[in-house]
Amino acid sequence: MQDDKTTLIDINFNDFKHEKFKSCIIIEGDLIGKTFDLINRRTIIGRGQNADIVLDSPTVSRRHAEISVVDQNSMVIKDLNSSNGTYVNGIKITETELHEGDIFAIGIYKLKVALLSKHESLFFQRMKDSAEKDGLTGLYNKTCITRTLNTMLTQPGHERRLVSVAMADIDHFKEINDTYGHIAGDAVLRDIAGIFGSSLRSADKSARFGGEEFLVLFDRTSLNDANIISERIRTSVMNHTTWYGNDRIHVTLSIGLASNEDRHLCDAESLIKHADAKLYEAKRNGRNRVVG
Image 1 (tube, one colour):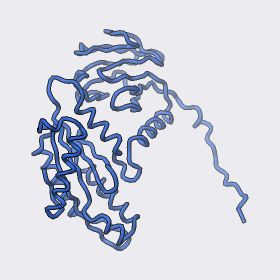
Image 2 (cartoon, one colour):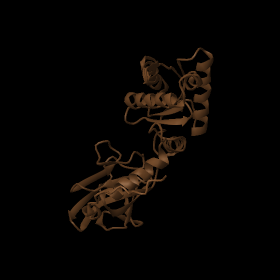
Image 3 (cartoon, helix red, strand yellow):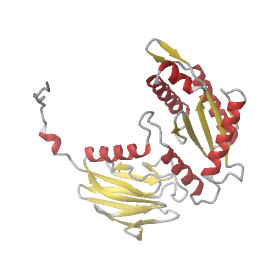
Image 4 (spheres, helix red, strand yellow):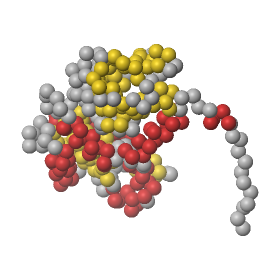
């Protein structure tokens, strides 16, 4: 018989009276959907890592523009002598007021000014994450990482951007699922995702590429340096124990590398294909190794 009782909860009606915060949302560029709260009196936007809003593109100057919150109702955006200029609603500006709904351009990025509550800002972030991230591991998904790699390789700039990639695969993963079950296999995948997170630099990006395969992007990194980092990841995985109930599960990782140091590997498809070929070379040579 179905229970017809309803569980009662307390509703705090103050939750529906959220204070609105001045924010900007990226609506064009490789970070579409990312939201920034303009909570400081001054917010620097630029490519430099010390900027408040970092837009990592050669089309963005290190200190490109500054947004100042004048008072509760007024904001001003000022160009900081950037190379490509700052545009508000399609007009190049030196300094001008910003209003809700205005769209300003910083290099390849377009951002829209909005007033958002904390819940609305969290909603946008969750929507962005659900579109970009793998639900099991929390890493980027295949679509997002491929788009990111394409952006890295095609952004305009005075110098060619050096990018290396690693394709990694868990050795004999089917045996884990067959022996311990798929829930244990999921635990292994989550653990390895955590190892990627703790082993990589902030500029690098990792994704679950499919099944038990992972793809790592090493930004502005030579093949030799990518090899050093990949060896560190391989060793960490080899020495790690995943506990599933009373069972201790150990796995190893095979990794293939590619870099656009090789002038023939100039697009995302060729880089991934080459790294995948090197991965299978690692498998043929005995697994639990890095081949570049």
